View (cartoon, rainbow, N blue to C red):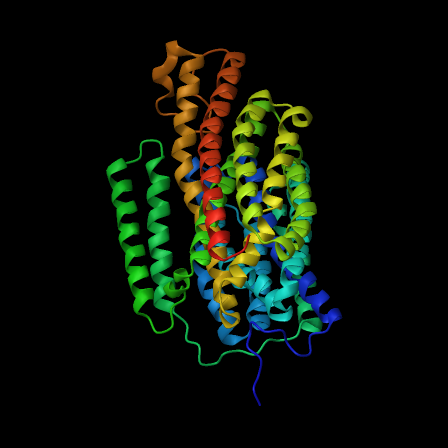
Length: 502
């Protein structure tokens, strides 16, 4: 008897079961999506509590992004090989347990280690979210289902930074990780009771060598980028590490081309639609991750926002994105994706440029919130068509690995942004401080973004210069992110045009 492939609608999947599939995917993926934003809100308090440097704070984010991005590729393949539901549940359990570990961490080193293992859990569950939806919905209904998933996940993720900021204001920062535990338990129960299993392709092998090369290559690249921006860092060593990372990633691509069971099948990129939509993802999520990593810190340090208020700046973004994501999915099904994948990234890029001015002004209601809503508008009409294009650009039996690749690329983009834009933020920080106080320019040459200025002057003067330096550092980051997002619009036009959708 022939069994359906993992990409096909399961014959026993009725409308009620499909609803459970969507909501289980929402609960699980919302933990991962909210986690990054919650951590950025907690950076100032974690940095003070752990006595951590800027590079250590970057690694608290990057350790998670490194393993998440590298193992997402294996996570997608594992779902195809051993069953989407089984791997999805293992990922949820791992994410919940490592969230507990993060909350119990008492040092920067322990938290970095916990975040690395948390990323592995996320790598197992994230590709399963979209792959399960695609496996249990026919092609003509996927856009609407994915739009529902994106909208509800965005709402859940929007509440995370606000709740996390409130927890930080009233208690220890460790509590921001503990909120994942009840969500993980509920998602596990729903999946166990109500989500049908998709048949596993038992003949599929796991590409462990490819996974190792990806982790080593991305790790060396991220470490080199981070070290390049460290105070007193050795630029020659940092450059060497980046080059070594590039060489290992080159070996990874060579291995994938020759492997009989690659974790990232290179032949998928022969599809122009798939290649271009992933290039769009790389640029757009580089911009999004870079800007949003530094945003809460500059609002807290330069304008005195509380952690809860800084977390609430994500609310206009995610709510607008949530409302429009479902509409974007319906529009993609009805009209194609060319217009959405071109205008959406362009609007998002413009909002990053405006964000530099909004942070300079500092007002929540009259500056920051409207710009964040505009950013949500751009992303809201982009996310569902982007995901739909990824799924429809590959054969049904390869949707698991395709989802893993696209999610991995978005995480790699974030990894590179956080690691690489630290030196950009510090450059802007130092030059803005020197511009505000030219007579003391030499004292700023060893200062880094977010650290107290080495000055022996009155506290009011220090605070004024420090605030201006933080705003200047963020402005440089925001403008680079704007350029990257606008550039991604070109690939949005190309990927939709090449797929024949107009």
